[in-house]
Amino acid sequence: MIAKKSWHLRSGGLGSMQLPEITYWEHEIIQVKIAMSYPLRWVNSYLVGGADGWSIIDPGPRTADNEQAWHDVLQQLDIPWSALQSIVLTHHHPDHYGMSGWFQQQTGIPVWLSEKAQAEAIRSWGLDSTAAHDLVLQFNRNGMPDEITSQLPDHLHSFISQVTPQPHLSIIVPGQPLQMGGRTWETIETSGHAAGHISFYEPEQKMIFCGDAVLPQISPNISLIPGSDPHPLHLYLQGLHELGKYEVEQAYPGHRRPFTAFQERTIKLLEHHSERLDKMEHMLRQQPSSGYDICIGLFNSKLSLHQLRFAMSETLAHLAELERCGRIRHEEQNGHIIYAT
Ligand SMILES: [Zn+2]
Ligand SMILES: [Zn+2]
Image (cartoon, rainbow, N blue to C red; front, side, top):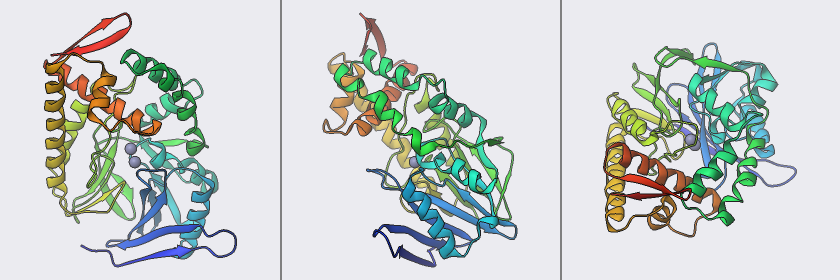
C-alpha cells in the first residue's frame, strides 16, 4: 500500500516555520509529522476518520510551534475542531502524550490511555514525583559520575512543559475494543518500551498502530526506570513475540515511515536484543564492570545528556535481563553495583 498524496505546507506572514508534512493513507488515515527534538526529529501523529468524526493518535510534544502546527494542519485538511472525537495515546512518553491535555482544553474531548501508562505519567510528572531523584540514585549506584548525574534533574524538568496541561484520562482496558474512525480496534498491551503501551489492531484491513512498540530501522529504547517494571527487556521480548503473531499488512509506527514487513521487523528486533545480551555477557566475562562502564563500552561516548540517559537505562535493562536469566550476577560494594558472570 502506498500513500495517495503528500505535501509540505509553509506558513505565510511571520517567520518561515516549516509546517508538518501530511500524508494520506488508505482507509481515512492521515499521517502528520509533528516536530520533536533530535535525534528522532518527528513523531507520527495520525488522524483516523469516519462518519462520526476524527480521532488523533499521539498528538506530539507540546510546544508553541506544535500548537500553531495543529491549527494550520486542521485548517488545511478542512477538519473543524468540532469534528474531533477523541485523542488516543499509545503510551505516556512526552513525544506522544504531550499535547493531549492541550487538545482536551480546546475541545473537551476524551483522552484515552491505559491504566498502567496513567500510573507512569503520574510517577513521571505528578506533583509528588520523585522520578528525577530516583534516577540520579540509580545511575550513581551504577557508576555514573556525579558531574553527569547532577545535570539530570534540570534535564528531566525540561520535559514538564511538553506535557502541560495534563489531561483527564479515559482508561483503555487492554483486550477491550476501542472505537476510532468508525472502526473497531483491538487493544494490545505490551510493556518494555513503556509500561502499559497499547497497540491498536484492525483485523479486517490487517492494520496496526504500533506506537513505539515496533519501529522500522531503529530499535525502540528499553529503559530500566526506578519504580517501574523491574524487567522491562523481558516484557519487551514477550511483547514482540505476541505482536509478531498478528497478521499485519500495514503498520503505522510512532516514528519513521509506515511499513509493511511487520512480523519480520519483530523478528529482527528479537535478534538485535539477543546479540546485545550476548555481547554484554562477553564483556563481563572479560572483566567485572559497573553498568556505566558497560554503557560507555557499548555506545559512543560522545552522547548528549539526553542520549546518555537512554543509553544508560537501556544498558541497565539488558543487565537486569541477563541477571534474570542467571547469566550474570551483581554485588554491591560501598553503594556501588558491580556486575560479573
Ligand atoms: Zn516512546
Ligand atoms: Zn516516541
